[in-house]
Length: 240
Image (tube, rainbow, N blue to C red; front, side, top):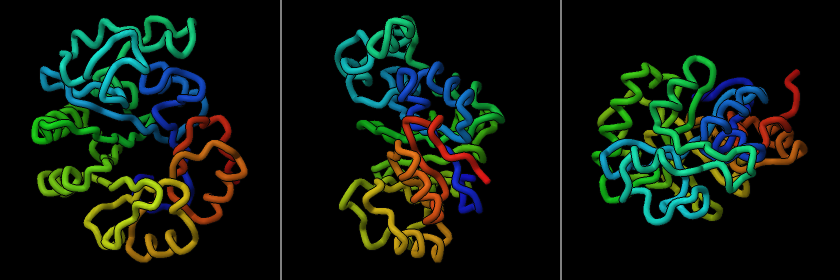
């Protein structure tokens, strides 16, 4: 349910990041076990032109490495421990390459791939489109970014690829509802009944982030959002 649908889906933020180290295969496996329908992941371009699944521009917060992600090759990133920061039981968890995540997701888990661009946007799109074609998962993924120009370039190159803009709090431009994307991914404070009505009239899906309490999840379900992005997919209310 990347496009507007009839039932709100459970989207695990960076995998089940409340229970496992974010953006790792362990977090995605845990998300599947907890019943997530979709997972949101972040990708950054490596020095050798591959896509590493990691949120931050630098390595310090979630690995035992230091410095910019973009300065390392994928092979160098693979040597880092991306799990111990979360808990000793996750020691040895690695930074995945996008292809590994696509292989794990297969037909089981839809993906929201957030692009974290640096100064090589064309190379990022080249590798993204190559991987989606290789795994034949373009229809099971939505590609999103805070960088509207990058999303526009993606749509120019691959018009059939579902894509969306991400908006932070107090950052909703007037042109959002008329833009040529399928998804509006908005920080929760932006999403109210009027937002959902405008989006529905424009034929756009609404993904809301980041929502971790069951009562809030139910609230957004009642508003009719298409996806709730949460660190805790295990808390998602049971569907009727």
